[in-house]
Amino acid sequence: MGDMNRRAGSAAASQPTQSLTLDGNEQGFATTRVDALLGWARKYSLFAYPFVTACCGMEFMALTSPRFDLARFGAEAPRFSPRQSDLLWVVGTISQRQAPVLKRIYEQMMEPKYVLAFGTCASSGGFYDNYTTVPGIDKIIPTDVYIPGCPPRPEAVLDGLMLLQDKIAGGEAARRSPGVVKPRFDPPHAVGDLVQLRRSASDPRDLVPALHEREEKAL
Amino acid sequence: MSEAVLEKLKARFGSAVLETHSDFGDDTAVVDASVWKDVARFLREDPSLDFDMPVDLCGVDYPSRTPRMEVVLHLYSVSKRHRVRLKTRVGDEEMDGAEVDSLVAIWPGLDWLEREVYDMSGVRFRGHPDLRRILMYPEFEGHPLQKTYPAERTQPLVPYRTEDEAGVPIQKQPPFGPDEGMPFGRRALPHDGTSAGEAAWSKPGEEN
Image (tube, rainbow over all chains, first blue to last red; front, side, top):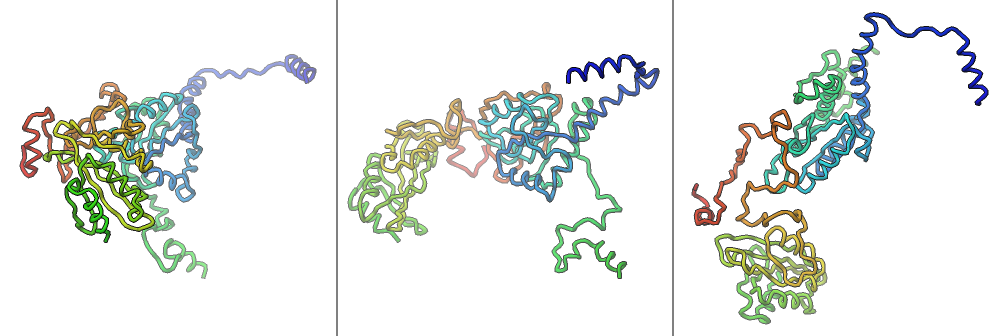
């Protein structure tokens, strides 16, 4: 092996090397896009640390299961060491007794790190306005996104996750500003294909109106 | 249903059984704190009673009564299939003398329940093997389920971040605040031990 490497090295050295440096504006163009590239890479590879303390955990399980499929966002891999994770999911009520633990977990995480408050209790303490509950994790650690709900529906959580992705893609400037949940609408061209979850139907084809149209076309 | 249990208690302990009733089918005996352990041992060891399962133990604070604190024990007999509720009353307004005998020697399962009653209500159990707080942290002062514990008092272990540190508003915004608009709206009572606070408790209908 050593011989081969030396031979390859000497062969490369004997050939004329091509210049890879770029001149003028092209160089500047490359550096300004590095941030965007980093943000793009980060937002699709969030390693999650689930800090699950209460009933919201059940909804978190629904979120990570195939129906809602957190894996679409590249955020499905849990890392049960704070040193390996980017995103701290605080799922559930945080008691005063847990607060030092939560703070320590946050401090052990590596930069860049993000915190997502899952549910009303993590966001504000909810109706636990009493001697034992922290009134929102933002009293202890910086929080990027708040997801209200008791518990929040998985769609709401996905909305919050997309909001966090927007913040990450926006870089440092976006991170310092508080997150605002934007209203989202189903794309108009897809409405017919969306499953109507709330409707109970005797004919399963009724759940997806587009299936009827396709059948009629086939006939 | 098991009023025979109450009859046996009255026959055995006489005037130490302060009152009994069977409201809503729940046979209840209020006994003097001095015979708390004797009554418990009798209920456990008498073959015709055989209360082998302590269901629950809790403390109830009645701030306008003396004695103020009530300790409530629910018992069930798996073999005889009968239940009884046993109460005793201890402690004056300042919680002096809020002490009863520990029943851990009779039902080892009461260990953590007695710790919980101690933690939440401040009743001390004589002879408990390890009477420490069980739910709250050791640094916590006071007993949160006593009616004199201020409803809005918190004792954070980690100092809260200030809004300057956070850079964004983190305090509750109107209309949310100390009184969250809940239907049972919390009354702010003076908790400095003055008579104003006690008066508010004895007349719950009035605003102070």
